[in-house]
Length: 240
Image (cartoon, rainbow, N blue to C red; front, side, top):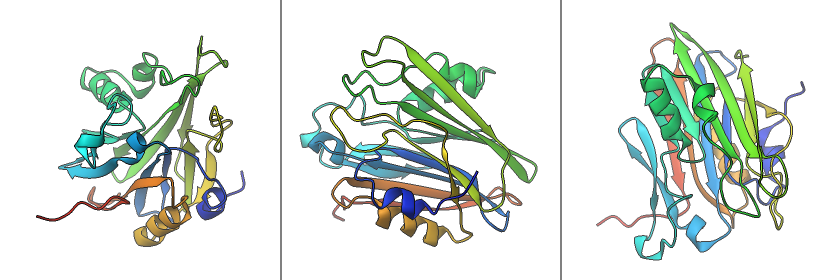
């Protein structure tokens, strides 16, 4: 599969929606996870990412303007033991709960469906990185409506062995529209650089400036298990 520069996939796409990238740096030293959100409505744009220990939470930027928290407020990133979970909804907690009782990524998502936001029926996208003694593997998933009426759910899981300098990118929508067309096919294969700031800037600067909301990127060092991360919010909170 040919690799793309992620900038090429984003720069001319007005609305890919929410997106996850997972993979490995060119030097093989880091596992990479990135997640971004976008929004067209005031409710969707009224959000910020906030670090809370080893979790990333979404909070309303202005609580007074929050009209419906059900599909926009959640934890997009959580860790359970040697697993890093990244999703676009509250299925983060479903996966976490499953792992805590001996379940799996796959079994957890069998209990979930796409979002109940007709007529879009936004797909649920998820990823999990599993670390083992200086190495890792990762899975990605998409749960999407099987038809235009949302009567059935199609579930697709992709299981990857890491390749240096290679990542996989999945997002909720192919592009903007009404209703918004869901992502189709396999996750795109993208180039992942060694430098976290380069990758963070490539994603953030390529997202549509009107619709982008927040971005989180984490590079986990395979040798030590430590990580560095970057968090960008379009909405800036005032320091009091």
